[in-house]
Every structure is written in C-alpha cells, then in structure tokens.
Image 1 (tube, rainbow, N blue to C red):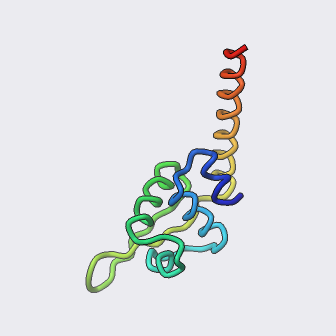
Image 2 (image 1 turned 45 degrees about the horizontal axis):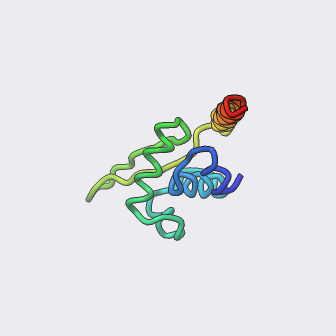
Image 3 (image 1 turned 90 degrees about the vertical axis):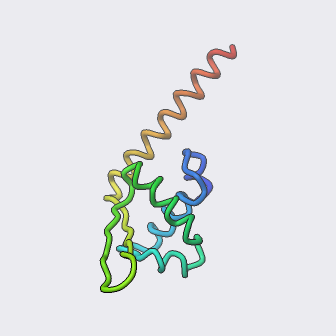
Length: 105
C-alpha cells in the first residue's frame, strides 16, 4: 500500500505518510528520526501519531532523558491488527458505495 491508497481509506496525508514510513523502516523510530528523514515536520509527526494511535495502529513509548522534554518512540502495532482494521475499512466503504448506488437507481 502506498500513501494515496491509505488516504482513500480515510487517513489524512500526514498519518498515511507516517504509516508508510514505519512500514518501510521497521522497529521503534524516534520522533527526530522521522523528522530528519524528511517525511514530516515536527507538528505533523505529532498530529499523525495521534491519528494512528486513535486507530490502534501505533505504539508510543516515552523515553525520559536526564534533561529536557521526554522523547517519543513510535512503532507499529502488530501488522495483522492493522491489516484487519484496514480491511474492515475497505468493506465498510464498499458497502456504503453499494447502498448509494442502489439508492440512485
């Protein structure tokens, strides 16, 4: 799946981009890693992480440093769970389009 496919399933662009990045780069990624990759700027990483977390696609771990604000590490939830939720989204979208088409007839 690419970013555009994920957006067709209802994800906003930053969330789709973050999900694609984490799929391509497995394992926990620090917020700064994502920013430095050029995929997203800082505020969009936070926005995307909140959206993916609300869907159950993301695991967020706070790592406390001796100084400064805590850093966040992001990793994906189990792929099977993500796939199941995405497939359910596709099914719902198909059902909705079918109902709309039937109503137009």
